[in-house]
Structures are given as structure tokens and as C-alpha cells.
Length: 236
Image (cartoon, rainbow, N blue to C red; front, side):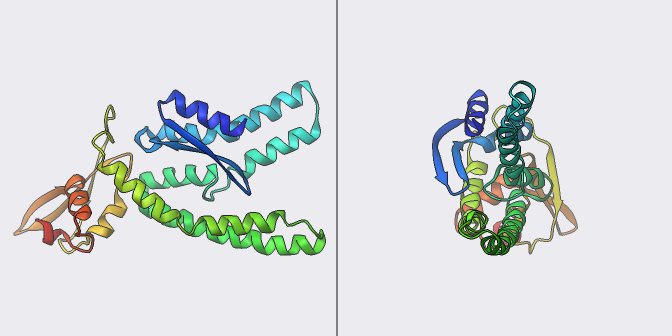
């Protein structure tokens, strides 16, 4: 029910559903092209799963009075709202923070937070195995969350570059322009960390007492053509 809610909502917004992956913390729907949607639609897709659990808990409370099923649905909904990759709460926090600080900066923060919470779960898991022998659930979940962060940044980075370079990225969307005033020595690999799915960036700099600018499309073009460690002055 939880994953079906994600899939149905995504299909309503014309995203592509690919598959469902099985993991130690449940199933996870693989949906493409979410980044090309507006911020509100992206958040709605990720929130639809937990909302389905809360809705189910309410219906069960009103008509069936089954305390166990109510607790199960409330737990699944609340657990999925934790700001951890790859949980729904992690994706919601990632996109919300990314609007302000940039997608890649947000990814770095959420991945670090996920690792910290993962290690806390592992520690609590060891305590759980002592108090309740043979109950390894929390320990395994913590280990899985820590392991999930290993390639998370690389995946987000590649998806980000691919999405931002796509000609259809901003199709049918009116985006605000965000202006950054930087030095000509600013490295491209640092600059793209400021880019967001929800705004179009212009990088301004001074040259011979004149204020000039370079667009995010130009930055991404030169970055993709081997100048990741170059600066603004190398491409103007």
C-alpha cells in the first residue's frame, strides 16, 4: 500500500515507474524523472507513502479498532519520515534543503546525517540484542542505512548533472533566477554545488570594473567537458 501510493502519485504526474527494490527496511519504488517536477509535486510523491499509512491507521481506528494494525501503520509512517536516505523523510529533507543551499550541498548534509543516525541505530541495536536476545532488527537496519550512504552521493551527483543538462529539465516550468556574486577564481566543481532544481542560476563576477555574468548552462557545459577543477577565469 505504501509503495503503491508513491507509484500512483508519480504516474499521476507523468513520471516513469521502473521497478520495486527489496531491502532490509522494506520495498522501495524506483521512479524516474521526479526531479523535473515542481517542488510541491516532488514532495507530494515522497509524502504520499507515509500519508497512506496514516490514512490506513485512521480508517482502522474508526471502523475496525485493531490496535496492532494501527500501531504498525503509525510506526511505518513515522519511521519513513526520518531524515535519512533512502527513506521518504530523507528525500523530502533533501529537496527542501536543496532549494536553499543547492542540491549537492543538501545531498552532502543528508548523507552525513544519515550516517550519524545509522551509527546511533547500530549502537542501540547492540543494546537491543543484549536486552532481547536474537532480536537483530535495529542492528540490521542501522547497518543497512550506513551501507546505503556509500554510493548515495555519486548516484545523486550523476542524476543531478544528467537532469540539469537535459533540454527538458525546465520544460513547462517558470523558474526564479538566483544570482550568485563570486570571484573569478571560483572553481566550477564548487559552483555547481549551489545549483538547484527549483531556480536558474546566474554567476556574476567583476572584470575590469565591470559586472559580468555566466549562466549555469555554460558552467555545466564546461564542467562536463573536463574543466571540473577549472575556475571561472579559465572559461571566459
